[in-house]
Amino acid sequence: MLAALTGLGLSTAAGLNAYIPLLVVGLLANFTDQIRLPQEFAWLTNGWVLGIIAVLLLAEFVLDKVPVVDSVNDMIQTVVRPASGGVVFSATEAATRLDGSTWMSHNPWLSWLLGIGIALAVHTMKAATRPVVNAGTAGVGAPVVSTVEDAGSLGISLVAIFLPVLVVVVLAVLGVLAWLATRRLRRRRRAAQPVPR
Image (tube, rainbow, N blue to C red; front, side, top):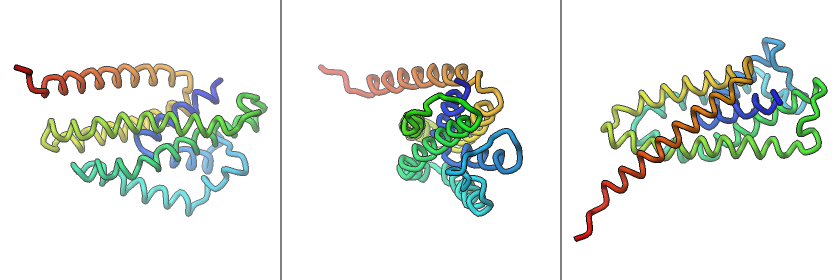
């Protein structure tokens, strides 16, 4: 069960920023005993791979803070973030099989599917709210919201690995925030519609 929570948390983090959970998992697997990756995911600990992920993270960090560019980046990330979610969910779930866990061992493709779906859902909410933030703040809110998303991705990644039980709380809070954001967007759309005469 903890493997599922770790996978859920990491794929949620990937929906906010594709590269942070990949880098966290790769670095922890490379330099600590906290994560042991199976052979098929050993590439995540390769120094070149970690370097490329770090460069991509730096580019994402800069691009996501520029209004309008962030929306273009979100379009590109529609493929990258779900793929990252699938990788981190599947890698950490597969790692637990090394410790004798039987969770999803009969259907390993399901961990990929769950990771992709969760990351895509979080990414979709992020991509939908960013233009509203940019328009409502004349672009000033973009770097602030992006920084909060990056910090959230890092925080969720660490919680998912070190305190996976708290992932349930994190997901509940994110669910409430998504619900509130959706209500607010709907109210704005209704207010923007012309009143029939």
